[in-house]
Amino acid sequence: MNVRSGTVDVPAAPTTSLPAFAWREVSIVAALATTLFLARIDRYLIGGDELYFLAAGRHPSVSYADQGPLVPLLAALSDYLAPGSTVALRVPALVFTVLAIVLSAVMAREFGGGRLPQTVAAIAYATTPMAVMQSAMLSTFAVDITLTAVIAWLLIRWVRTRADYLLVAAGFVAAVDFQVKWLIPIIWAVLAVGFAVFGPREMLRRPAWWVGSGLLAGSAIPILWWQHTNGWPQLAMGAIVRDEQLATAGLLSVPWTMIQVTGAGGLLLIVGMWAGLRAERFRPYYFLIPMIALGLGAVVLFGLRPYFVAGAFPGLFAAGAVYLADRGFSRRSAIIGGGFGALTTAICVGLVVVLPLPESDLRQSTDDYSQIHSRSVLFGPSGWDSLVNSVADTYHRIPPQQREGLVIVTQNYWQAAALDQFARDTELPAVFSPNRGYGYFGTPPDSATTVLYIGVDDPGTALRTRFTQTTLLTDIDEPLGFPGVNRGVAVWLCEGPSEPWSALWPDALELRLVDGTSRHGR
Image (cartoon, rainbow, N blue to C red; front, side, top):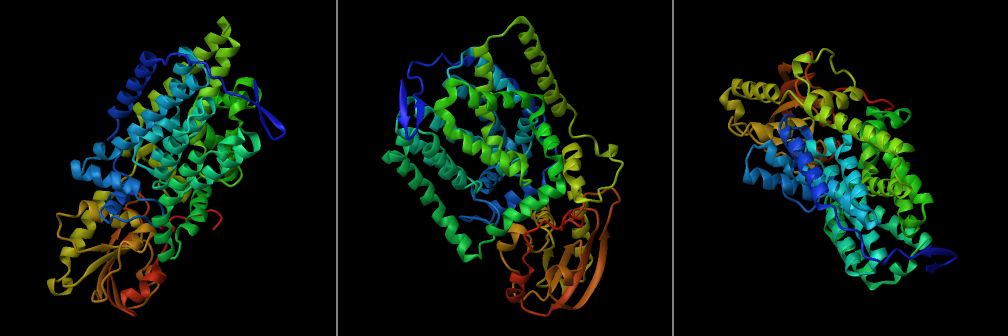
């Protein structure tokens, strides 16, 4: 039976009962992945962005300059329950990764796949380098990937069941996702275009779809109001993120970057794309094509980060696994498939066991922005102790009379967040930074005519103002240090700013991360 949609006949999704869910097999895969990821969850030192999430959580807001409020709230909750614990901080990332593993199997079942394709889909996601990255640290993409996949699953299930509560649920999940990253309204609109072009168009006539859309729109009101009152910083962040990604890996390196994200399991993703376009059983789900095309286009054509398309991974793994199961497994194909499965598993286990490498193995200095990502992956963040101790020692060498009313201003938000997190017991004064979202946490008081400035550029350049007197007190410049943390950083004592802080702060705001390295293409 076909459902007529404009000039296109869209086959109705099967309404028969679905295969049993492979609880045992999927539970084993999820449990093994959880154990593996949990075993190394605190091996990386806390990252600069994680420190920023903790700082943002201590400055609660309905929005931030560069993201929504949900991840900072998760960070604040973890710090409340287990202060200083990187394990507690990263548990949400691990939970969302495991949920994506299970969701891959659930979507394979939704497509009509039995125990084998469900298990294959779960293993495929669990053994990608993406899953290793997603579970390693708290990040916005760790949460956003899974929530985007949940939305896709709810709409796929609606196509089969026509249960309208699923549309409301999808809108609710989209509203939650909007509190993480601000791409979801674009994805929601593209999904609507997919239904309009490929059908079933009746979804767009369902009141439940508009209720779900209303939930998403309503969740945006506080964020949009904050952005409006603060000069719409998010509008500039898109170009900055693209610039940072291109500096990390240019357009020509996109294929290699995608391989690094998908591993050998990328072959199953390609199979899933082929199946989605060619296999009859997937025709009812053509509405997903624009969403996947948008993500791929953003990564391939515009150099955006690979995880922009990762929300489609569970569905594509599921489609690929079901398609291969439909074609049947000969002895030869079973051996080949088992070999690829063993390879992806070995890569995943190897990444978890080996990384991060000991910092003592670091031999090359980090001189360029393109090296920061690889260094972070291979060796992890570093230098926080050196930065905090140097700043604390410098501060306590300043005569007591000069310390009265003094505040700390850092050039980048990592420095400010590290001092905010690690220097609570060192009696340091309040910390401010005009960088990224930190610049919106607060402005130094106009009464602060003396500041201790930490940065890679001189204070006049960084803060776009003049001081009556600046004195270089300390250099923090370890040859193999982390740029902007304990390499190329100086501590200055600055007195007599040319303007009150309330007047000069708007001009000092800088959304780009300043770490002292170069940017290609700038």
